[in-house]
Image (cartoon, rainbow, N blue to C red; front, side):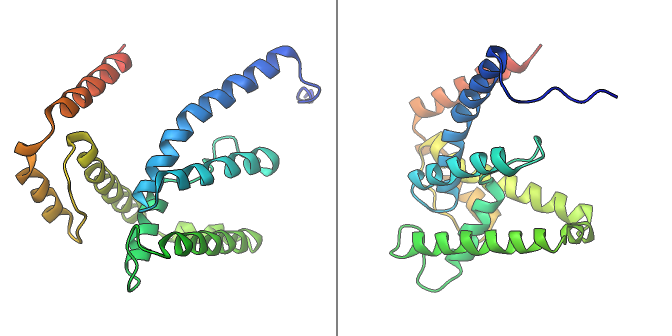
Length: 196
């Protein structure tokens, strides 16, 4: 078997491919990271702070090109649920962002410790139905949290999904029609672009 071609020095085609990949990731990562920050109850610019460092670290030290680096929706929802369970903390309250930063640092240190101790096999102890249920519940909560932007409704976030869903249905008559029309047109255009 022949050795793979060396990555360095890069030729012009390699630099072009890297530049295209970087632009694509940036265009995708900026709005995504801002939305994740809002899911965590933080101002959108905090998402930009968390978006630039993980891809750089993955590029320097990572070895798996399929691994997602950076914030994800489930982490954002879990951050919100953990911090709002603390007395006196709510999104926008004083000290909320500092607690979120401390939680992120502690989570990173725990992940680093699990990696150093080679304890990734612990994930195999979680059954598949639990993971599927957790993922589906997260998707439903995320979808409902974005409806207020889609319909331009002032929806609060309660402790029960069905109660929040019913509250959204009750407020549908007061939806902002131009925003709704623009959102539906965007979804329709995206659906048409995906169809063969």
